[in-house]
Image 1 (cartoon, rainbow, N blue to C red):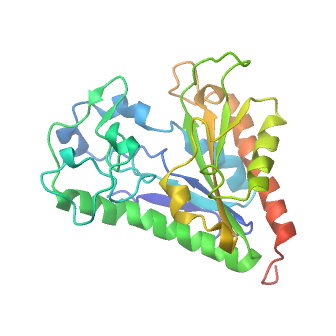
Image 2: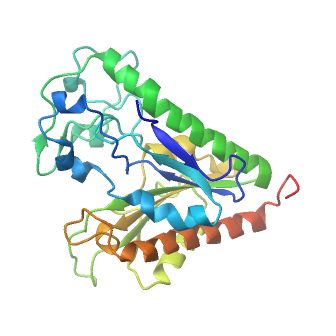
Image 3: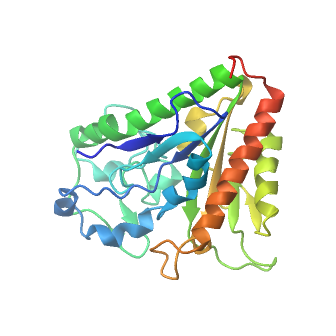
Length: 284
């Protein structure tokens, strides 16, 4: 079995910002083809295609974080463990069900369908199969992410999770074009407002169109890991795929370097702010 994720950067973070790339996984297991109605290359719409490349400059600058290898088609790291469409199961999971709006729309813990393809699976899954995916992929990612945030918090007195995603091009509106970058903080619940503003200002300085929380406010990862009262904040950033992929939204384009630089700039600006409000506890 492929490793479900990779930690990049030092185990003791050098910066108070920890990066997470949960939806770029493309290590499709061979057995998936037996259950899925479509070959792996047709599941690209579930991926944040090549979003791992958006963190490359941050890694070079010494930031620490996680990149998932597990494909979202297998299990979505940005959904709660109980957020599963019961119609996909042969029996209930051993925990109270949570059927969010996302799960009702087919994008729960294990996606049921996706736009353009429809229903994905040939059969229903047993609770044991879903529990195995949770144990092998979902919980290890969140355990590792929690450990990195706690390590950053111990060292700096504050920490911030920057959860990196990419979004399909949004439809045009009447206000000068759709957003190209969306900063999410769960409508103020997962980060201090000035941190969201810093991230948005850094992106706006490049001339890109920015929005906050609409249409993407963040998901389970932010809800699970943010504790602003303790000084542990979390933001999601969504980047329009046209900014770094080719016309078919399948392969990296030259713009990927500029977007990776932007992510690093945002991470550094947030880090400098956090360092200014909470001095390191240990000597550097």
